[in-house]
Amino acid sequence: MSRTVDKGASILDGIHVLDGGLASELEYLGARIDGPLWSAHVLEDAPEKIVAVHRAYIEAGADCIETASYQVSRIGYAEIGLRPERADAALLRSVALARQAAVAFPGRRIVIAASLGPYGAALHNGAEYHGNYALTHAELVEFHRQRIEILAGAAGAERPDLLAFETLPSLEEAQAIGEALSVWPELSAWFSFTCRDGEHVAHGERLSDCVAAVAGFPQTVAVGVNCTSPSLIPALIHELRGATSLPILVYPNSGEGWDASRRTWTGSNDPPGYGALAREWFAAGAYMVGGCCRTRPTHIRQVADGRYGL
Picture 1 (cartoon, one colour):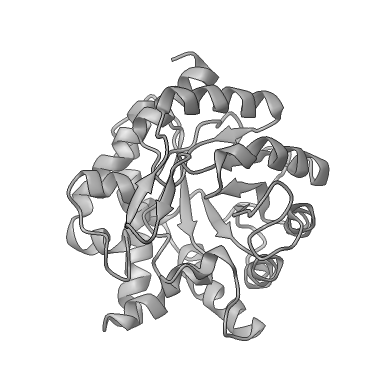
Picture 2 (picture 1 turned 90 degrees about the vertical axis):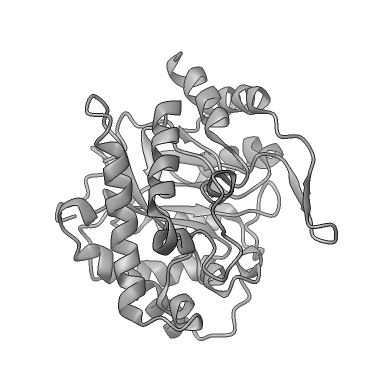
């Protein structure tokens, strides 16, 4: 990751299909993700399952896959009694596993995006869906700086193509990441927000204001929304297009909802329907489309079929 970012010749040129949900797919393979590290537990216990999920998404047509590092952080690892070095090693291992999956497809160009969740994800209490954190701005900058530093210094198979800051709930967190990134202007990154409606991110700021802020960072190569209802995506694409000329990515949830009282998912999980929506999102101006919670390789195959005619 030692190149200077050229927004006119992005690492994402020609890359249009992102992968889908990781944690739920790991569950289908029998992995346990109910601990405080969520899918990051699998990095420690069953890394072969992570490789299998990455390969399934590439086979389905994804040309960009995200690493299993969304929940990896020093504070998260400390909570279960592991030293900071274990968290740092897990970040690098997640990239190496994604590379391992990608090399099985020598005829394909597969972009590896290092998934970096918001501070709220490390708390594993749903705070990423409101962004009200009990810490100072300087502490928030430091949280993100620690992970960026590890990936910025990576080499070989442990080096991602870009950093994916995702499920961001607020303008302040995006600004904190920008401050943390400022030491490494040569990196490439995308910023993706989680939204409460068709105009506002989870914390309440306008999406357009958040996008305008991150679009000014020299590292930013794309902006978008994720972990959001599919029904909101057309309006959010409109907001994104009005705020930036950068490539737009959208990777919403499957459309199902979580019933916390019954601890079960409700609603429809319809891959063909998702594929039809993806075609509409591309037509509306999305550059890259994938999936977040509860989407599976069958969803991504529908997205790829709509984009590439697979």
